[in-house]
Image 1 (cartoon, helix red, strand yellow):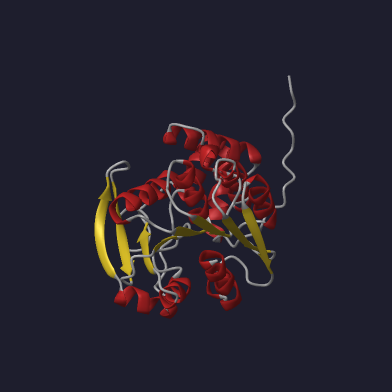
Image 2 (cartoon, one colour):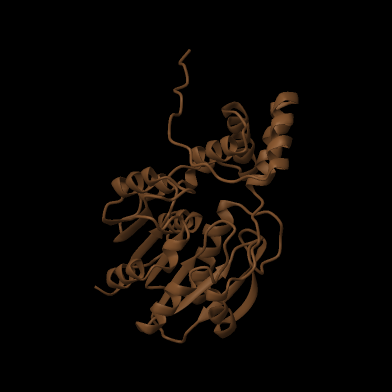
Length: 289
């Protein structure tokens, strides 16, 4: 019998409400099975946040419509911002929304592009309470059929993973930008469980349950796995101080991409990076050169 290698990858510490920690700890002691189901339910449930002021202009000026994505039988809310035929697709992350990359979108419009983005199922204005990784990547492919072609895509966090998977599955774009993107869903589930003070056995059970729910190995959607099939020029952006996704993820994805550039920032974290003008300038330069 081969002994399973211990995962010593650094875990980022996130703030988790105390009642969730207590519930998770209690269920772990009583039944790892129940604890894994509890964790899985939370893992699939995004938070919805109030629209910040910086996103209000895009929300007000964009054309919006609710559409059903046939392949997943869930609805998304689509944003069309600007009227240039040169279109860029923006893909938000977990618990994000279609306007989350609004500062980037504004600069894209200034540089002659228009933008298409969306609220993934159970995010932003889209209906639903739970969501899954395939909902993101399938929505991307659906949007290409309805609104494409796109010159490029920009994905943040899980949106970066979804964009990599979509390119692997046939999304036809010239360039890709990913920001704060995770490399491994297995590690993400372990990290999630540890932040809830659950042990790795519960994390393992949770991952197995999610695989069964999805009907395939969730790691098929991991950033590092998809990256190996991506041949187009890709800009990988990550902050050293990202407390949601470790910097090691960027190094791993970058190493697996055939044609990539790596931009490492400091003191911007996981979300502030989306509004940093130096980062946005690098994105514009990458897209226009």
